[in-house]
Amino acid sequence: MVKKADWLLVLNDDPLFAKMDFNKVKKLMVGKKIFDARNIFSKEKLEKMGFEYLGVGRV
Image 1 (cartoon, rainbow, N blue to C red):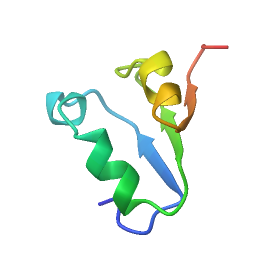
Image 2: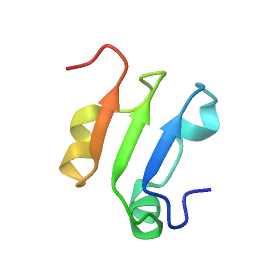
Image 3: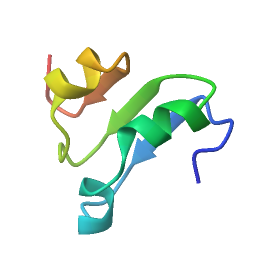
Image 4: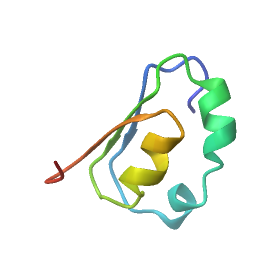
């Protein structure tokens, strides 16, 4: 799903997404950008992990 991806696009709020292991995701991705259309993730947490986070309606 994220192997060698530049972006992770989250377009629905399925509970499986909320349970993702972002340490593993970070290792698998080439880029570190996340677009969260449902705002199910913590912007602060992901940015501290080194991701660039964009959520709908968030600054």
